[in-house]
Length: 348
Image (spheres, rainbow, N blue to C red):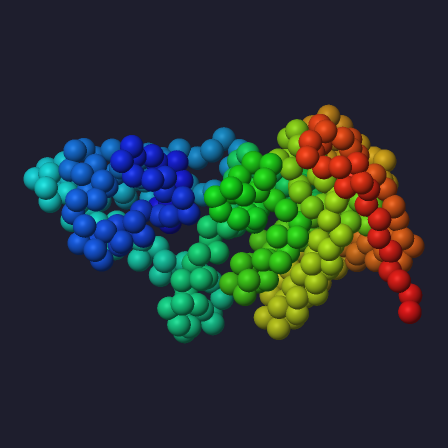
């Protein structure tokens, strides 16, 4: 979609959580030709240039994640918006709106055709909700997750692991990027609706395996961090249960659709897929420091079902710990008691 997260206009409030077609539709519904955006379009083609140029170059760390088709879309927009400079300026808002909204509708149609088949025959509400999920999952260059194991040999000390730059946002706009984007609880509450119901099974599997690699203290992280300098925090007791629930739901979807877990994987179940453990024990330096400074070891790789078993066993045994680096530098507003985490299963 043609988003306006970073476009600012002095006479109009920031475009939070909006794409340009929604803004234009509101103007059209009110027949508000005095709107600041209409005035902006009459004065020049800056908005058209912004929408075009933001797609003209791929981010440096988007290899294999964003295709060259994005640049082709930029070329299409250039051709589409070129006539705007040759028509009377008072007509530009109307033509710009017609071109942009039409293109957006075609994009939405293409998205629904690529999603799970049930969406195509659903109501407009269901289709719009499905399309909206594309705003929450995607490439964000300044927010990195541990990648899944691409290739490894048990006798090799260097398994191949690619960092992931595609993740689920905890919310818009404040939790859209950087260290605040990825949260364990929010991710797995929303994974079923955003990825499984829409048929994005490989994306869902990548998220499940990425978080599995960060299991520590028997917990899935609350806040993941940015994958560069901010480290994961393990101060959420229920994120691991939403993670386990998501695995169960994932297996149900895969068994009902008869689709393969992951690209290039011959296994019939994600439970057998390898996970690289960044924290094989609670005192390991782990992610992201070891990813930046250390070589990887195949000794840390285990199937997902063993990671799940460890999470359950740790809860049965019970554990109590104080968060790593507890104190004002970690959270200046938290009392000392807030850094203490304890949990166990009570036997009845």
